[in-house]
Length: 611
Image (cartoon, rainbow, N blue to C red; front, side, top):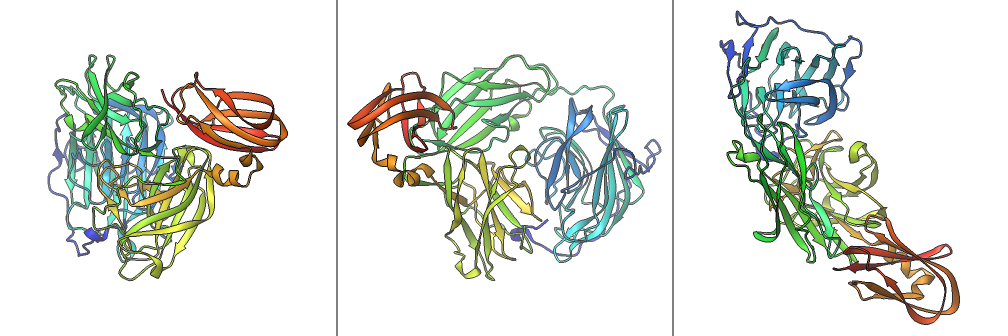
């Protein structure tokens, strides 16, 4: 891992060996473990899957990243619930949630870190850099009852050598008895990094409140195995309702337009326990700082274990008619909930005034809340990123800015804008890259760059990457809540969820504008069609016109902010000076674009409907 300079501490580590203990547990749920040294344990028996039919070579593993999800092919019973897909982390673990685990690797269980995972060798491993021998494979048995994930010759990340040592181990999940087995074929070298929290071996449940740790900061020995056994009889009762997400599956921040379509609150509630939950109340509210703007309460259906339900609050919509930063907070109200730490989730909303000439889209308030983040070494492919879901369409992106807090050497940097055309809206195609030379980088204030050419988007989002030009240059972090959950770390060119994304945003912004404004200024129709009034409108809107020649066959289309045509009107001809009256009584409140077309020319006018 390219560590934060804040936590760099490169000292030699003593080589630990496993303790004499050969079994452990139970945890609160009832899992126990035995190793191959235990008289009743399972002997070490390495399974070479690399040449088996239908084996899968895992691509795109790098440094501190996660790939997947991959279908398991069967339901695996883990704690009191079933999982059927998994993700593979470069740092020696598989997970059943979307997240990233990187140094430090604290003891298990840990509610505040990545949950719902299995760590055979949770440490700072790396698949990155040229010549790295690390490989990873997974294989599913023909009977769809066994999954094996093997890490082969994977080294530790090393600050000076890039990588060092070698570790070969595997994770085996068996649906036949719901057991979990770790096998260690080879272990060479030590991690040249932190003194503590550098290696964790164990399992953890979906809330992070229950887990069974085999060892911590102790290196497994070669030709060794550990098997985790579920309880034969379950006595643990888990009463646990959670807010899975707010607004979207990642609770990722959003931008809304002032006086746009009223927002209907939405959140997903899940039964994370192992008992049936009778209907219970859920509170959702929009806040500006500590002040409540709107609130609504909904009641769930009866939820069986593992079942989720999307709740909406149609009688408590939010008319976002002022700009600023807001939070939507959802909190379950289940009595006797045993895991209060996962009852609440938050989504950030930033309301912008899109009627102005241009706007900066920003999830931060510009204040620096940390000492800055920098990956050791720096260089091409090393940096961080922010995702910007766009608030209206079409939209033009003109500039990028970032706040650097340290640059002692100094070093340059690149600001790159990347499209969301990858699988599932992930970053893929680079749209532009602007280099800033070392002596043009501003420290403690924004460094702003203009794109080579403005970029126009008609849907989706964009990603902005801040790339280090070398070692030592640090990007500013903002810790003012709410946090967007839109931050990424980019290492070796691979994008992964930033390990502290729930607590920090990177101070990176984009400047956007309405692309139709500049076009209209050069459009002959701009002299024909004038103001729209009243604006905001309620039941009708007037469009002024003035022409000294007869204009025939005018098409008028009203589109919502997603570009969908919601109303069409054809006008036979116009001449002289006057106004057209257009009814909008049937349209809901929100922001719209009125497109007037004559032959191959068109002009757009934006207006708002209020109710």
